[in-house]
Length: 117
Length: 150
Image (cartoon, rainbow over all chains, first blue to last red):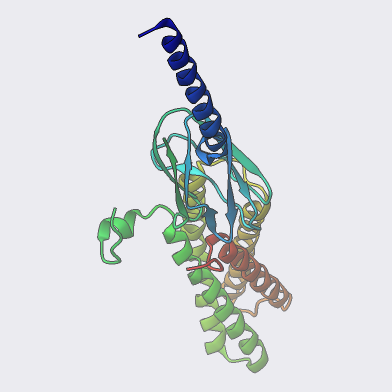
C-alpha cells in the first residue's frame, strides 16, 4: 500500500469518526438520563412520575404541590426528608446505580421508585 | 408484609393505623353524651343524665389510648420531628378537646357526688368540645388521606 493511499485511508477514517461523533452527540445530550437534575411532583396524594429513571450523579428534587404535608422516605433507609408542607422541597443526589423505592411515611399508600442506571 | 385484616401481628403492631380507628370512639361518645345531657336538661329525666354521664366518662377514658396512639404515630411515622402546619394544628386541637372532655366529666362527677345537678354552663363547654373535636377529626381526615384518590 502506497503512502498516498495510507494518507487517504487515514483521513477518510478520521472524517467518518468525526461525522459519527457529531451525529451522536446531540442525541446523547437530549437523553433525559444524562440530566444532572430531575424533579418529582407530589400532587393529589401521589408521586409523579411514579418511576423516575436517572443517571448516576443526578440530583432529584421532590416538590410538594399538595395542601397536605408529605414526606419522602426511602424503603431501604437511603434517604429521608422532613415533613414537607405545601411548596416545600427535598433533594437527594443518587451516586450509585440501583433501584430506590420510596414512600410517604404519613400516607404509606403513596409509593414510587427512582431507578439509577 | 402482606396485608391481611385477620393477621393478629399486623392488627396489633400496625404502626399508626390504630389512631385512625380509636379516634372514632371519643368523637362518637362525646357527641352522644352531649346529646343525652342536653335532653336530660330539657326533660329533667335522671335516666338521660346517667346515660350522658357514662357516655362522657367512656369518651374521657378513650382519649387516653387515642392520644397515646397519636403520639406513637408521630414517633413512628415522623420520628418525632418538630410539627408544623396542619399536623401541629391537629395535635393542639386534640389536646384541647381531650382536656375539655375531662373537664366536662369532672363537672358531672362532682355534681353526682353532691347528688345535685351539674352547672348549666357545662352545656356551653360541651358544645365547644363537640365543635373542637369535630374540627380535630376533620383535620385528621385530611391528614390521613381519606380525601385522596383510591
